[in-house]
Image 1: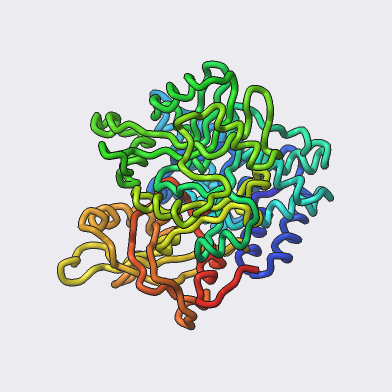
Image 2 (image 1 turned 90 degrees about the horizontal axis):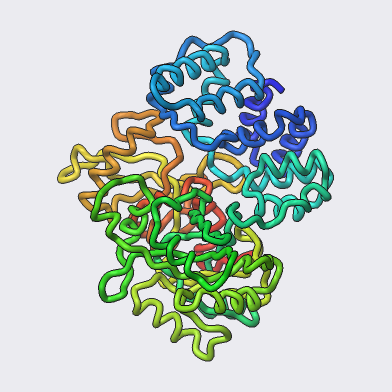
Length: 507
């Protein structure tokens, strides 16, 4: 398969708003892909090489850019093999070797292919919106139910592997994916609820748990081998030895736990989110490494040889209580006074509560509304699209942020507002340094950036507006923090923004 075919399909996907048309286009492309190039084609179209991050920055690519080829000759397989070689090139002389590989690849690419490769390698294509469409396209191309594809994707954590199984072996091949201790699963997520009463009215028997202001973790243990993953399935085991030591001491031989971790003050209240996230990086700062993380587990997906994904939450939490002990997230089953649980969570410095259906199985993403999060303050995770140069005291700093919501149908983020409120001097200095690293273009007033950074915004609500393409605008928005634990694939979509309109009721 020519890379040109993938690039053309990507452009066509961006040009249409119809989800059905996107699904049809992808299904036709997948149906015609050679078996040995299918996985790479799926990976490229969903914005990530099969090798993961290659470690190539935008400026490096610009420096290596050559005159484009006149005719499209590159194949998907050739690009995939070159990226594999890039990913494994290290040691003495590796910088020169990597530069040679990239320059050779770009010299054989047309202008359109070069642009696609730039965005693929720098993460700009990784907007996540196409994952849902790709699941449907894989189902259509292979003639299997979408539910079977979604489940295999949850278990494998990889759309390319899922696509290859579906098109080569159908339902039977997808059914071979099992929970594997040591291989992270895509996490189940909570949808926002307008209020605690709305959440309680939407579900029957429930568990009401604290919503912690921490970082999502998934912990796997088999014997003495322990691994810890983030919500994006990144392996952070080497950075969190206190967590691995703790899990190694739990009363079991194998387990998969879902939960959160955070750093606490001496009084037991949560430290700022950024301090927790600092532990996941590669810094050698002794103060950072001295900051101990405390885990709080809220789900058990496997225990001592038994997979529990399909068991109701009531049973999974019973298993959790036998193994996690004092490390359970605070909360109550069928609470007599849910308002008291919410009040206690807020009083302890946490964000709110999550109301969960006790009869629900574990399903990746926000399938349905089995988990509902309730926070007294509206917040959204939005994509940074640009920033305007400040005035007065902020002269010389990038200040007013342009904010976008994710398009669930695979298009670019949809602008929903701007804000400069909440930006501390520290954040102003940081984003003035960081945003130009992701620059796509600029004018006299604004530096526009590729959609790769996510920022958490607090707001009073939203209102209808003709100013922005999504038809809504943020009201009294202020910056809470950047979210390095999330990429643009995990930002809130335009539907989540519109759900905050007065009188809106979810479909």
